[in-house]
Amino acid sequence: MNKTMQEMQKEVDTYISQFKEGYFSPLAMTARMTEELGELAREVNHYYGEKPKKSTEKEQTIEEELGDLFFVLLCFANSLDISMEKSFDMVMKKFNTRDKDRWTRIEEGEEQ
Image (cartoon, rainbow, N blue to C red; front, side, top):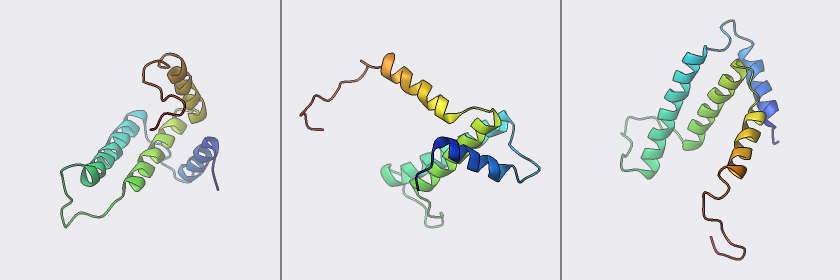
């Protein structure tokens, strides 16, 4: 089943709302996102970079680390009462207007 961004934000809010601690502060949330981004970077480096995993390191996947980062991002948005749908629409408008001629477009019939 595909979920909307609004449904995902609501699901995260329902989960967090069951705990007395609630959402972390914006500063703590930024630190959590940085931590999760570091874990994602580490996995990308293991799969695509020159740094192999140590035999003692737990096997993680890029998909799992992206999920962790996305969860924290949704928590951050919820804690500040920000709609990720609106945020997404804003950034796509920016890319489709300000940055519309920034990249070389693929011409119709051209191989990718």
